[in-house]
Length: 141
Image 1: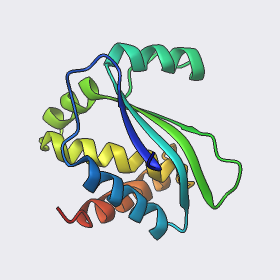
Image 2 (image 1 turned 135 degrees about the vertical axis):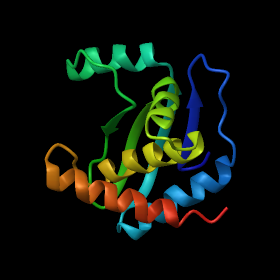
Image 3 (image 1 turned 180 degrees about the vertical axis):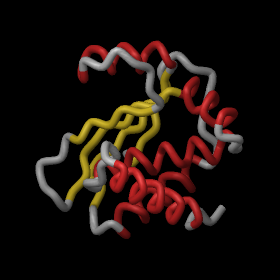
Image 4 (image 1 turned 60 degrees about the vertical axis):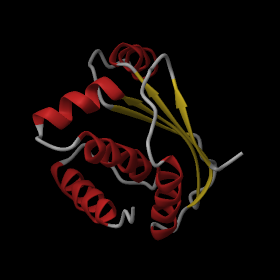
């Protein structure tokens, strides 16, 4: 079984280019001097992610992504990243982006959280956006 895996909860949606995305995620982690031991991306609905947000984070809001860092060492990544496909579709329309580009941005955003980057403060958000843009440009498919 691979280090980067994709799962789908009650969705007709399936990733295209999954092998390319796996390689891109692994290469991005290495660029950040991290080694992925196990990383699961779980694609779900708005409602499913809302319930997790409420249950695990006590946040009564919809979101596009929730990242759970299960790592025990700073140089290694073990984690779960939950992504709402509904929210990604809405955000792609709102930000006038292609769905695939917005999805890839969210995929790499979760990984960057596992690499230690935050996005609560303005400076953190700017750094996160800069890194997202950098790694989006490095897709080679």
